[in-house]
Each structure stands twice: as structure tokens, then as C-alpha cells.
Length: 441
Ligand code: PMP
View 1 (cartoon, rainbow, N blue to C red):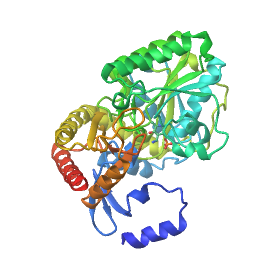
View 2: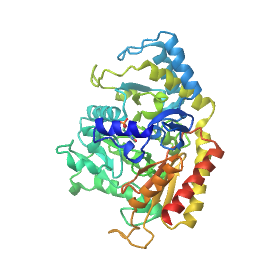
View 3: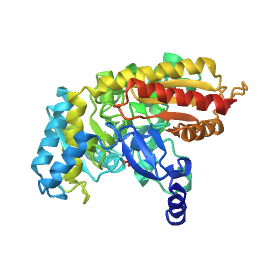
View 4: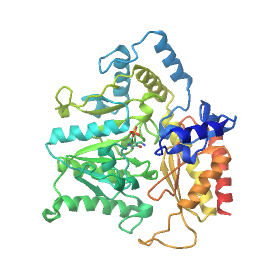
């Protein structure tokens, strides 16, 4: 059962393992939005491979594509040598991107993690501009390698590692609920953008335009915080004015998660470098950069890595992307997301410990606070990670897997597969409401 596998895991796997600590189960099988553990208990999976499983577990379209690829004696590993599967995958990906971006785009396949692709994006931006340095945002998350950890504003473990990549300048993200400028609503985003303008305009600031600015359109690990579209447009203008390349990290937001195929489309902007991973491989490991042709100033071999040709991931990714587009799954994600948000907002009116409900599409965060009226050093409601943890545990007991995130670990995050039905959303919201009421009682 679960217990013996968990004990064995604890005895043999590194102390750095993370999810099993909060989600004490061993998964035997999975289908759609459900996983089943070794004891036969079934859960709604609102973690979905940390946002990877756009079509849920073992979607027939994806499984059929993998099976067909195996039957066709596809070479499973090709380094970055091309194949008809890769050709078809690139065709489909380029067709799914806005034409103004894709018409003149180049793609680079990375060793298949988000972090490797972020590393590649930063290297490319430095190569193009000849500059060093990166602007990044408080609360951003970009990976766990040295450089991507240095770029992340979320990780309390950072302090434990000496000598991370220097030259990252952190900027305030427009997180209206906990605005660093102490103002709410649209004033927060206006001040955030103004801060950046001021930094670059003021010769006394000592800050020179860096090679790149890296941004998540909706911060994921940072607590499901959507950036307002006006703010994104202003950041796009500022970076263009200063020759700073705008790297849009859609590792988590990409492929329909936010209600559009790509989250930057909400703002009608075009990135300089787009980073994609997670859902791109239809459950299997894959990551790429897409950027405008004029930026292709790399020399051969500038960013290599052995596992950049996983053909099964391309076959699965192709099938997944075709399905996402042909069934207009992003529109479904928008509708189900709105439904879920409405349920959580209704709960918020009843439960004072729910400080904020926010999100875009099916990337939703519920921020848990102290209801005693106590305020933190900035005069904002006290985050309540203990209560958030208790809620997560209650959800788990009731058969719902959710993850925590956010700057204080006090945000309950929902990332269900995008194929979740209206009835599933109601069932998930019912379980969550019961868990919240019990944990707050
Ligand atoms: N960027 C974002 C926005 C992410 O959410 C993640 C993973 N959670 C990464 C980068 C890193 O991806 P990976 O874990 O595959 O290295």
C-alpha cells in the first residue's frame, strides 16, 4: 500500500524531495483529472504535474500518438537531428502562435526542462545585446539551476547557496493584494511600471539597461498572480525603448492554461524570446525557445545538451497541441476558470480567512490570511501559512490534491487539467469549501 512505498521512498530518496512531504501518497494509476493511490483511493488532481497535464492524465489523443510512434519504429533519441515528427511538431507550434511572432521565428530545442530553456534564453539575450545583467521580478520563479535560481524571487533556499549568478536586479511585480508601494488596484501596476521607467531614466540610479527582462505573465509559484494587461504593454514599451530583450516565461502559463493558448496574447504583445516547457510535450519532457529570426546570432553549438530530441515527447506534444486547438480547449479553460473563481469568491464572502481570490483561466490562487486583524510590517493582512497547510491537508483527506505557493506559502493554488468539466469544478469547489470550513472552525 501507500505506507510501504512512502517509507521506502523516505529511506532512499534525497532529503530535497518536496511534493511527497505534503502529499503522502504513492500513485498507482491516473486518468483524466484523477489519480488513484496504492490503497485504491482516488483524488481530483489540481496539481496536474505542476501545470504540465493540460489534457489530464493519459488522454487518449496523446496515448494513441505515443503508441503509433512506437509502432512506427520511430528513432526515440536523435540529439537535435531532424525527423518527420519534429517537422510536424514545429509546423503545429508555429501555426499556433500569433502570426506576427511566428512568421519570422526561429525555434531552439533545449534539454527538456524549463530551467534549461531559461538558461538558454538568458545566454541568447546576452549574445544578442553584448550586455550582462537581467531584470527579474519579486515573486518570480524560473527554475532551480544556479542561474535560474538566481533569477527567481521566490526561493527562500537561495540564501543557502553561495555565489549564485550575480547581476540580477529585482523589480516589483504588480501584486495588488500585497502591493510593495502600499497602494491597491490599478495604482499598484502604475507605480510598478513607473518604478522601472524611473530606474532607467535616472543616471544616478547606477542601473544600466541589462540584456533582458524576464517575466511571467501570471506568476505561478509566486502565488497565481496575473499581471494586468496594461502593465504588460507598458513593460513591453519600456524594454523596447531601452533595447532590453523581453523574455516571456510561459513554462507554466503556456498551452491554454490561462484561457488563451499563450498568456501574452491577453495583452496583445509580442515577446522577444518565448520560453515554453511543461504542457508542450503532452506529459513528456520537452522545452523550447521561440524567438525572432533577427535574433538568431548564435554560433553552432552555442546551447547544446544531449536530450534535445525526445521524439516521443514531440509526438505526444503534437497530438496534445492539435487537440487543444481543434477542441478550443483554451476557451473551455476560460469558462471553467471563471466558474471556479466565482465559487471561491462566494466562499470568500463567508470566510474572513480568505484574503484574496485571483487568477486567469485555470491558474487560480486563494490567499489565506489571519483573521485576527493583525497586520504585517507593511500594514497588510498577515499571511497564514499554517492555516493554508491545514486546508491543504483537509483537501487531501477528502480526495483533492492542491499545492501551496506564494511568497509566504499561504496561497492555495489550483492548476487542474484544462479538460475539467463543469460538474468536476463544482465537486472540487465543494470539497475545498468543506476543507476550508473545517480548518477554520
Ligand atoms: N518557469 C516557470 C514559470 C515555472 O513554473 C517553472 C517550473 N515550475 C520553471 C520555469 C522551471 O521549469 P522546470 O521545473 O522544468 O525546470
